[in-house]
Length: 408
Image (cartoon, rainbow, N blue to C red; front, side, top):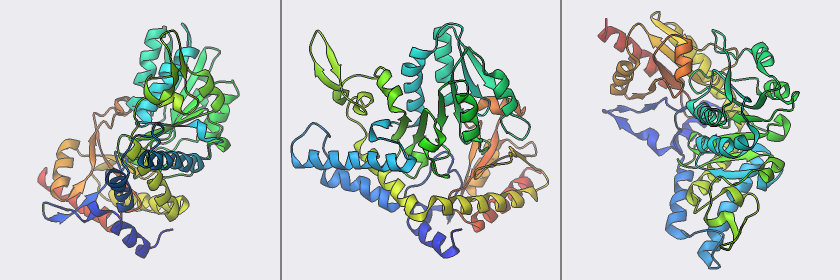
């Protein structure tokens, strides 16, 4: 596990953590929404714009060649990070949301017909619900939802029961953004593949916490967002097996996804460029490559163990507040705690914590069905990263007592 000295050094890598909020030290506990960026990533993005800003793939001049090399180097970093078989299987997108929309609009459109079913779970983020709703509505298909138990665990026995000959696609999250539940994703993939059904894994909340090996998992698709991975906003990636990408039509057209254009016919580019229309987020891609290298230098196993320690410490700390109830107590959890505090509205809690310098997330966390499952409107969510400390959790705890006292 990471030592206190290592954490101190890591915190020095993140300039924003030195910020003062209302004159108080900044305690950032909203990492499930977006992570902060280390200076090396900020510098890498700045260096691109300052020294070799240029469009990629099309230019023969020095700047274009350098930008192209760095962009494709980043793709190679992502490929190795998730152990994809080929660089052709890594598509840069704006993030997990665009990736799922891409899959639904292309692969989903090809595969789902009238009367078919798409299977998701009750744990999903809106981004893994709405695209499938739209597809099912357009195709006159049915969206089927696997239920969760009172702890926030997916009922695997119900998953088995709900799979049928009509099931054409399964799309499921690896880690719940609102409850922190870690799904037994390999087991789920194996269950689904017994029926020869393709499966999409939403890894937006997992690639920054756990080692991902897409070949070992044998998932058909996997999506992730850079901004939750200590990289810039507006960049992410989609992994898909090459055979599936070859069979799919383009999602958008124009720019680099085209090999040749005539008024009578257009020939599309090879993979992965077939799915990267227009000028991409070059700086973002370079940034995500740098961010991945940064966390790998620290070590994902070490990060996981330390964040697990923070989760256990925070859970025990918050349990001491009698008026507080944790929502989501799955057997396996990532470093996320959602809670309700008496009848105090989460927005009021968030506002009061902000006055104490503590940033948390309040609301339904883009997962309204989960809130309805637990008969609540919203929660307060504290989510931890490897740059957080026990002392910051103590600040959160003390601030919550102040909130209780104010609303007594």
